[in-house]
Amino acid sequence: MYLLPAIDLRDGKCVRLLQGDYNKQIDYHTHEPAEQAGIFSQQGAQWLHVVDLDGALHGSMKNADVIEKIVTETALNVEVGGGIREESVVADLLAMGIARAIIGTRALEDRKWFQELVEKFPQKIVLGLDARAGKIATRAWTKDTDLTALDMARLVNDWPLAAIVYTDIACDGMLTGPNVEATAQLAESCSIPVIASGGVGTLDHIKQLNKLPIEGIIIGRALYEKTFTLPQALKLIT
Image (tube, rainbow, N blue to C red; front, side):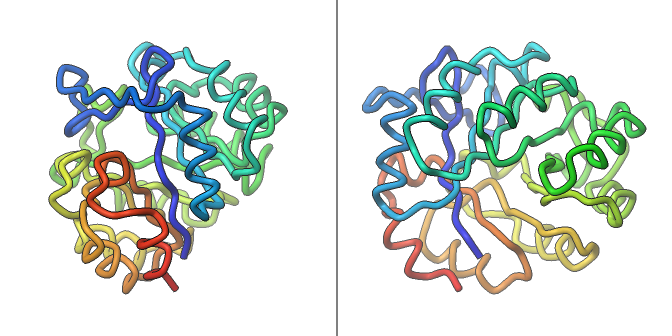
């Protein structure tokens, strides 16, 4: 088990969205993104989860320069998502030094392309599954589909994916707790490592997720608003 502090980027700054709503944004002006990443590294993080919110909304990455600065100025393993919908972008990001790329929207809309991408970059691609009431949402969570996260996970179960990041949109950014039941069900239904995302607000939430057969936990707003510290959380995981 490992923890992934999160940096969500919009206009080059660290922000958080409540339930994925671009009109409900919290700005964190304390540190620049690369500086914040360095703080997470000093506190014991080995991984970092970065989302280009502008890229997710517009369909192409907008904060690549900020991401490159994070990669070059820290020793963190960085996974990046948000607007990655072309193979060339994946190749550029990996050449930049990121550890793996997260694909959400195009993975759902063009499975043949996604399968070819995963086979070309084995163990370098993460599938992002973002669910609202059990059904996957795409295009920065603005478009709902009829496919469930479980259905999609089963479809890709034998592909050489690095992981699946599962987010319950209703929980994301709310600090009210993750969807433990749905996360457990997903992790138990496939052999691909699952990373839990959305809703972690207390150390008790970390303890709950630590009991599940998952590989990692993403933490965002709770760290920025200091409901607990990263070192405290790291002491709880096994």
